[in-house]
Length: 404
Image 1 (cartoon, rainbow, N blue to C red):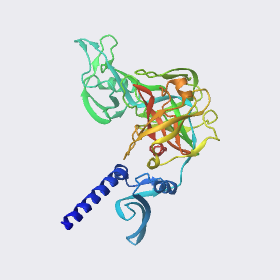
Image 2 (image 1 turned 120 degrees about the vertical axis):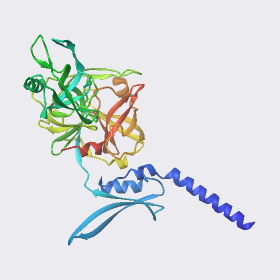
Image 3 (image 1 turned 30 degrees about the vertical axis):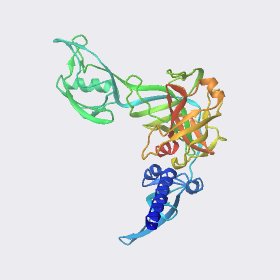
Image 4 (image 1 turned 45 degrees about the vertical axis):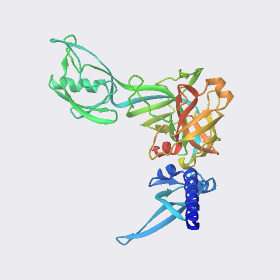
């Protein structure tokens, strides 16, 4: 009887311990730790002091040295321990200094040309046999080669079609991120006498976004998400491009079910403030050539690791009022992510000044820096259409990884 009672008590204690552990340990966050994650000593200290991976979790750096072919090699690992003595995760990390950057917050004009041309529609061609059109290529496809020759603009396609003399041509294109090929027969236009494919195409894009940061080497990150073609939604592979200063003309406030926007003007062809060389899932990147209009030397801070981003108060920096200002927001949910994603966390605008100006988050604010505990943790990327006071952000260290 006593033995049964003791076993029952032990079972209850173990069950309580199990429930407490489940509730107080961020297993999802621990599992999301991947090899070669950059980490600073400050991040490690914060993980332990604020128990960001759980109340019963400690982390520690360890060094391992081994010899391969007579050469000594060394690696640093982050060991995660439960209750201070049970190792539950070990992953290689790169210990580094915190990157200091200048904060953005100002709107920029972007003008980019594509690697390839984007299909934006089909077009019937009047041939000697009647109207014909393309049946292989779809809106949003990006044609990169014709007969294995790189394509950058309309003239490049025209040149290859003229050389074909009406024979089939091999088309290399990208659809939803995957490279594909097909064979098409050029159609001879009976009116112009030119060979055509029966598609409408474009090879450039323009838009407005916000600068997130500039490094001490004048590399910049902006927008927080990819530039996409406004007609097809396709992510644009960038060949080259420029950034330009913007003049704000006004603000269309956001409302439930309707996105607002910053109404800005920039002059393409004027002297640019920098060049664009990369368009990725977590932003647009390049080099600043003239920082007079976009960099405030007094406005800088380190970039925080995504490991220390937490639910709670934060600041959004934006020049929607005409000058760069800080606005109060609240991080309401964070996601543990292995790879770059432009929806890393959710936040809510709390500042009445910003709500009065914009209604929340509007188009053109993508890329606005978000700061927590004095460090850049991310940038605005998307707005919730049903509630413009809420939006998504991307982790800043994902953006930093893309800097050339």
